[in-house]
Image 1 (cartoon, helix red, strand yellow):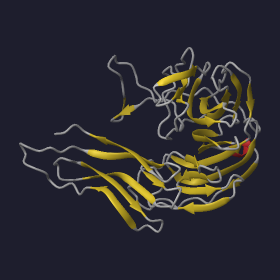
Image 2: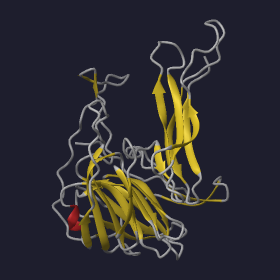
Image 3: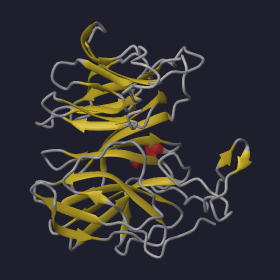
Image 4: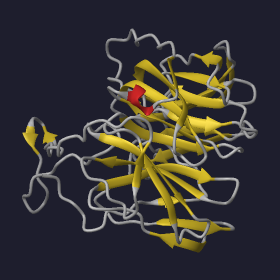
Length: 355
């Protein structure tokens, strides 16, 4: 049996976009809150959760000011305190998930107290199901909660269009067509030919457009093939739905494919395609295999849509710097890259303490 929290609360900063990196730890209590100004003043806060494991991955604001929250529940229990309705045709509830021990060099890992350490549930966990909660603008009332059919996948990103339509993207599982609406499959990306390439975190992804009240799906698009955590953004006018799953699929609000952008190595947290001119930003790191510092060297380059290098911001070759007794160097790496709706590049990086 998984350890359950007495009140599994969900965390979200209601005015901020959400990156589809890792799901928050559902075992830690948190809250939904709404900020104003520079984000330092909380003007509304609430808890949302039930007896099981639930967590949020995104959300947005409806035209009437309602707060839309999109997250996941790890079945078979989902009792958020208000009636839950199903989007599409429901499926059998999954079995109670088993605890999976974390291995360290092939042996079960233990904490400092000697207790076994288990994997935390997340968007890749079997039995996960997306849900949508619509709250009042002041977060005092949960107006409705709808979930997808049991175990059809997991949400990793969400957005709300100017017309109030709710978009959800994530990992798809068997039965994703049960969500309903106009369902179609998109062309898959080619597998990475590099035998040393990291195993993809996802091999089947979906994006769905829901009605503003989240009662039904207008359409669902799904794609099979290697991908990182699926991403989702909308253009400022809502006329482009940008769905990242191996490749970047640009759809219109009716689900029609407008364009497909292939990024060498596939889309991942360190790559992004500009919504304005289609340029591709590639970030990350490479390693200087000499045993000398810095070992991690940052990369951040901009390529034209046809793959030619346009700008080289970071791409240090990692030369040996200074003397052994007097060197000011440190490991650095770009960890995440994205664009805003105007084409501005946003990224964050990591660096170690100066040696």
